[in-house]
Image 1 (cartoon, one colour):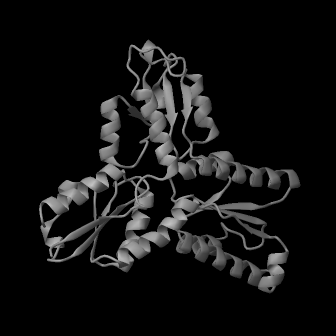
Image 2: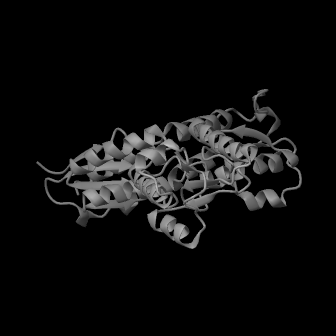
Image 3: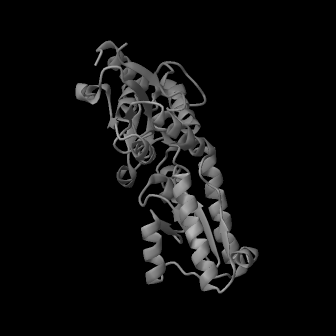
Amino acid sequence: MGITVDVDTNSGFCAGVIRAISKAEDFLDLPMDQSADRNDRGQGKKLFSLGAIVHNDSELARLERKGLVTIDKDDLNYMKSVDGEYLLIRAHGEPPKTYRQAEAIGFRIVDCTCPVVLQLQKNIRTAYERFSSEGTDGQIIIFGKIGHAEVLGLLGQVDDNAIVIEDMKMMLGYIEDGTISLFKKTEVFSQTTKSPAEYSSICSRLEEMMSRANELSLERFKGKAILSIHNTICSQVASRHEKLSKFALAHDVIIFVLGKASSNGKILCDLCKSLNIRTYHIGSSDEIKKEWFREDDKVGVCGATSTPKWLLEEVASKIRENNL
């Protein structure tokens, strides 16, 4: 019968990334000589992206061929005046100071922050303001990747007055050294693309430890509202974990396509690997190896929220056409 190949219908760009890329393409696809009030392409204005619009080299190269110019935070520090050029804020979002800095040197902002991230920024800012208005010595904990763009944007909402933890081990270490108090009023948030199962485990452990430290039963502790846990993981990402698990178990081989900088991709790829040992991750179709496959294998091709559908199809086609 030979190898069969399926592309996961639930893989590919999330809604936030689709929105950001669509906005970029709306700008980039207009002819340079076509006047347009909304973006001044007729005046020769460029579109800059602050950081990679998506963590996938193949998709970045496609957009750069259209004219997108990617810069980083250091570049902003050296720019003096940009005379009304456009700066795209990607789906991850940015702290308020970035907007002020960009506008101060003349950029016009194309804000593509994901609506889910915008709501999270608002919620974490509200929690911080609540602590301040109440005069409460509270603490905010963010479950996320240190240095990730979204996490930096969240920290910027609270003047960096939050504790970032990457995993259970880090949280327990911070409790042991006193960085995290078991007695302060606490609000916990998660980066939108983190593992729902890991977040739940961390929050449950923290709740258990705080209730014990405060000498309260779990039920009584919950009634005291000392700990507030916010469900801030994107629902699309959360459902993808469950669907991807089923996809990994239903195939003999999983080819996971992700960019090397994709935080979400690593989490999802690790999930596949935990369920299917024959999981291999690649960045492009050129990295496929014949020795990964056996005769009559059922192959599943999937990817991260930063992996374009066209790349998944390209990988699947190469496996089929080469009869690996």
